[in-house]
Length: 523
Ligand code: C2E
Ligand code: CA
Ligand code: CA
Image (tube, rainbow, N blue to C red; front, side, top):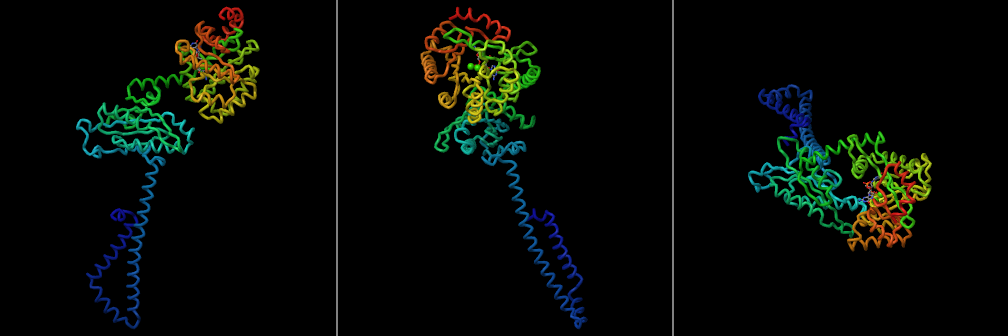
C-alpha cells in the first residue's frame, strides 16, 4: 500500500482525500452547519434544501468513486509490478533450464556468504571461485536424439549441477556452457569440486530410451573481489576450460597465466594467417602415392606448407585449425586447390591429385560448385582429382555430406576416406557412402608389426576394402619391412617417407621424371 501512495495515481487519490478532509475540518471550525440551517430556512421556498441534499449525495458518490478508483488503481499497480517482475525474470534467466543467464551474471546477482549458514572458515569467507563448465560431445547428442532430446539433457545437467551443495549460484551462459559461483572454497576443495562437477554431468542420462552420455571440461579461478570486475575472473575460468578441453574430454584445470599467453599468441597467429592467405604465401607441397603392385607413381597428395615471415614452419594442423575456426578455410582451400590443379596439369594423365577437404567444409553446400569452378578454370579433368575426407567430416551434417559426395561423384571426382580407423562409426560410414579408396591411418601402419592387435585391425581393414571393392592406401610407410608386409597383405597403394616426403611442385616434377627407375629399386 505505501508503494501505491508513492505512485502518481496514489498521490492524486491522496490529494482528493486531503481536500475532502480539509473541507470537513474547515466546515466544523467555521460552524458551517448552523449557517446551513439558517440558509435553508431562509430559502425554503426556493427548494434550497433539495439543492443541498443533491450536493450531499454527489459528495457521497464522489467519495465512493474515489474509494473504488483507489482499489482499481492498486490492482493495476499490482498487475504492472507482476509484469515488470516477469520481464525482469525473462531478461535475466534462461527459459529452458530456468537458470540465471549471462546478463544476470553481469548484473552481479550474487549469493551472500551468509546464505551458507556460517559454515565457512573465517579465512575463506571472502573467497569467490568461478567455475566454467562446457559439455563435450553435446552436438553428437543433438544428432542422436534430436534438438528436443538435447534440451532434455541440458535441463538434466542444470538440475545436477544445482543439486551439488557447493554450487552457490549456477548460470547458463548459452549453448552448453555453464558458470558456477562457489563461495568459501579452499584450493583443495576447488579441485575436488571440479572433479565432482565432471562426475555429475557425465553420468548417463536416459532420453527416449537411449542412455546418452556427454563429457564435461571444467576451468576455474578465484575472483579478486574489489580489484577487478567479476567478468575478468569468468574470462580466466573460460580460458582454463578451453585448455582443459584441448586435452580431451573430462579434464579440469585451474587458470594459469601461460593460458593467457597462448590466447595472445593465437590471436597474433590468426592475424598473420589472414595476411598469408591474402598474399598467397601458403604453398602446396606434394607427397607421392605409389601403386604397390606396379611400383609406379599413381598420384600426389597436396599438403599445405606455411613458412611465416620469421622463417618459422607452422604445422598444417595448427594453421588449418585456425582457418577452420575463423572461416578462412574456404579462401585458403580455393587458393591451394587452384595452385595444385595448375601444378597437376604438368604430371602424366594417370597421376591423380589428392586434395584434403576439412570437416568444416563438408557443411558447405556450395563446396561442389567451388571445386568445379577451380577445375574449369585450370582445365584439369574432374577424373584426375580425388578429395580426401575424414570420417568425422561425415557426422557433422550427414545430409549435406551425402549431397556433396553425390555431386562430386556424378562429376567424376574420386572420394577417399582419410585417416581410416581413427574417427567414429567407420563401418556405418562405409556402408552409407560410396568411397573409391580408404586410407589406413599411419598410426596403424607404425605399430602393426609389433602390436598383434593393430596387425589384426590392419588385416581386417584390408579385407574390408577388398570385399567392398574399394582400393586401400597405407599411410606412413617408412620402412622396407612395412612395405614387404603390406604387399603380402594385398594393400593397393603406399604413401610415406620411404617413397618420399611432401615436396615443392618443381621437385614433384623431377620425381615424376625419375620414378620409373628409382621405384623399381625400392620394390
Ligand atoms: P593427412 O591428410 O593424414 O596427411 C598426411 C600427413 O602425414 C602429412 O602431415 C604428411 O606429411 C604426414 N606423413 C606422410 N608420410 C609420413 C610418414 O611416413 N611418416 C610420418 N610420421 N608422417 C607422414 P602434414 O603435412 O603435417 O599434414 C597433417 C594434416 O594436416 C594432414 O593429415 C591433413 O589432415 C592436414 N592438411 C594438410 N594439408 C592440408 C590442406 O591443404 N587442407 C586441409 N584441409 N588439410 C590439410
Ligand atoms: Ca590426407
Ligand atoms: Ca591421412
